[in-house]
Structure formats: C-alpha cells, structure tokens
Length: 150
Image (cartoon, rainbow, N blue to C red; front, side, top):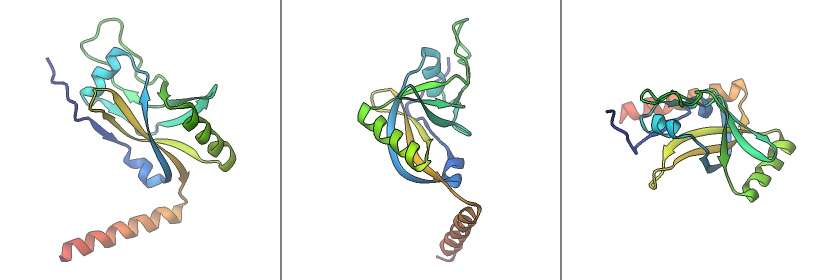
C-alpha cells in the first residue's frame, strides 16, 4: 500500500514566468474519489492548465491527474475538465475583469487543506511580453550573484 500524504504542494512554475499576477484566490474543486487519492500521492500536474467560464461557473482545463493505480474499472479520466468552487460574488467579480480587461485566470498551486480537501490557488493574470521575461531573468541572476558574495 502506498503512503498518502497531506503535505502535497504542487506548483505551476511556468505560470510565474509567463504571467504577472494581479489577484489571487483559493478555490475548492469537484473531484472523484480516485482523483483525490492520486493527488494525495502527488501525481498531478498544473503545467499548461488554465481556467475558463462556462455558464457562469469556473472550470479548469488541461489539469492532469494521473489515474489511480489501485482503482478498478471506475477510474477517472486524467485530463477531464474540473469545476472550481467559489462564491457567486467572487465569480461575478472575476468574470467582469476577464471580459472587460482581457485578463486570464491561471492555476498557481495545488495543495491539501488542513481538513483534507484538495484546494487550488488561482490567479487573475496578465500575460508578460518577451522583454518583461528578460527583465525577470536579469533580476534573478543579479539576486543570485548578490547571495553568492555574502
């Protein structure tokens, strides 16, 4: 039997490089039983995932959760879209910003809460241009050099 962990912390590092975060929220997710078991084993990936609105509800797409190996024929589909749980006020506020300002919603982090529920940190983000990315790389290199000297 594999050991399930409550210290799951899966991050989307690519999103930090490609987007500038304006606002963040923590959302719950609608999951199947085999999905939460795979997440507790740390077998999930946020790379290339994004959120979108469908019928005034927020969904996440391209969020990969590996099939649970001990499941029977009732295993889940790894790349299915999953509904995110937010309050109606938060959904309406972000829907207006996405429509008016052309922003996007990106998953940043997946973790297990203290109560054992899978939660996802999502960010309202604006895409970075190529020169913004180069500036970030430069800043990171300068900080690394400063830390080496001290």
